[in-house]
Amino acid sequence: MIKVILASKSPRRKEILERIGVSFETIPSKADETFLKNENPQEAVVRIAREKAAFVSRQFVDKRNTLIIGADTVVCLDKTILGQPKDENEAKSMLKILQGRSHIVYTGISLLKNGEDEADGFSESLVEFYPMTMDEIEWYVRSKEPLDKAGAYGVQGKGSIFIRKIEGSFHNVMGFPVDLFYKLLKKLNLDLSEICCIVFLEIYIYKRFLV
Image (cartoon, rainbow, N blue to C red; front, side):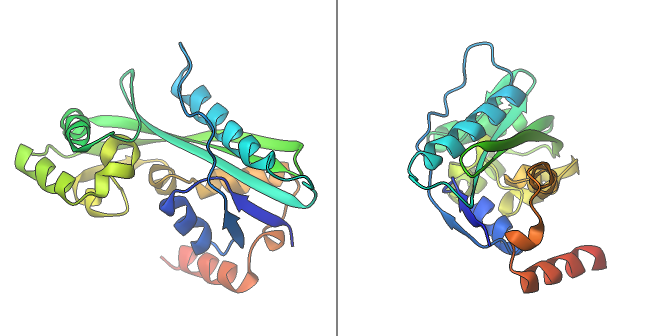
């Protein structure tokens, strides 16, 4: 079985990979996540995901039989890009401009196999919020859930109550689009059996098509 490394400290990405039965270890990347001037969000999330994977790859002398996963997510409202809020006040400001409106979530994934074979791409989803009162925003921010999430909300947690609809991948909004991950694995000629525990994979597929 190939050694899989997630170059991220995100608990949501970790949770998603665990749900689909991927056997992996986590090594957070310290790559610079600053956007470049005139860079659009699609280009940025792919570039940053690629740099995260490359940063972790450089820590290995022997890169044979390894697959490193880099990922990056941003929320984009019109031409404004929203990353993780720096504090509660910034979280409140982000939610104030998102409430009652639609925005786009972009996630880039980069897979680096054996330190040289690379496949990457991005996913996008449209998310529409219900109107929120200031009391609701303050209640939500006090829960601390928004503080480590792009756009200051979590689709899989308390933030889900404020979301009217999602067009596109739910897992993309959560931070790791599994459909894109699957397609990128295929580009690298990797089978799920090489990275997943078969018992968990069978359970995941069964549940996915049952509902």
